[in-house]
Length: 310
Image 1 (cartoon, rainbow, N blue to C red):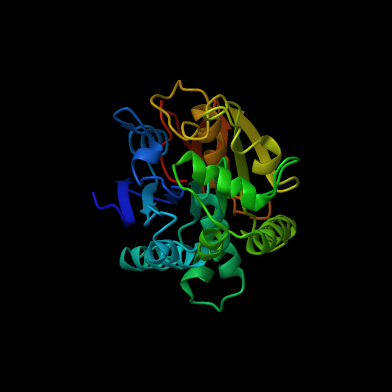
Image 2 (cartoon, helix red, strand yellow):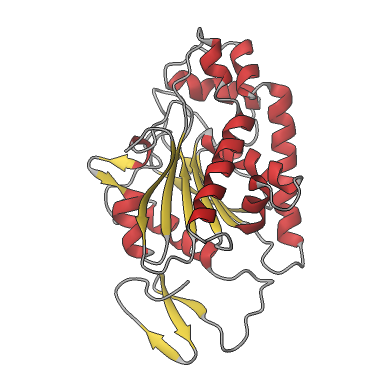
């Protein structure tokens, strides 16, 4: 598997949703989501959501504080643009342009995801970022620093994250990354405003359901992204995971703490939004014991896994 770009790790026979995973800076396209041999988007999530297409987005995250040319290639905006372009090309080539999208991100990858949505809101129809924004139905964040805390501002928390991964950041590095205080403040204002706007919209299918995980264990003696930093009040629900910043997005089995919460909320993102009115003859989905049961035109199919179309 290549390191960079959009990589498909699963596609069901009748996929009805695209789920895209974004790792963080200094993360790895597969290792970020792996615990031992288990790559959970492929080995766990696919079995629970068989009618999905699951993609991993990889980008050059091996930044070093002395190599400014490398840093410049990982700017938030350019990474967001690249992800949107590659996803749009994938969807166009597979005749799946109208499929709903869910983004799942770890750490600073969540800021790339947020930047992509902000870009899309201001673009004309047909633009790759606009297409993502139009079809986005859910976002899940693992330890993304959206706000400052009582002891540190947003840029200091970014610096804290990068130091965990061995990067000795300087102000110039943060500016090149698009993660200096000024731009983070703007991003952290625009993104929650956008989410609240989409939640309040009366346009069918416009809602973006968001969920925020925060770590409950310290990494090398430091609480990297605390609860206050990882949440956006009024934009979605949140939950702790008993893990540190590195391990919070890794599941080795379906019994690992946090997996059931992640699955339940991804399922909820797939369900039609509160503003969508489906005709009686259209498929409807309901929950039962954390699984999606499909009710379509009076026929019910129940199995040990999610079945049918979303």
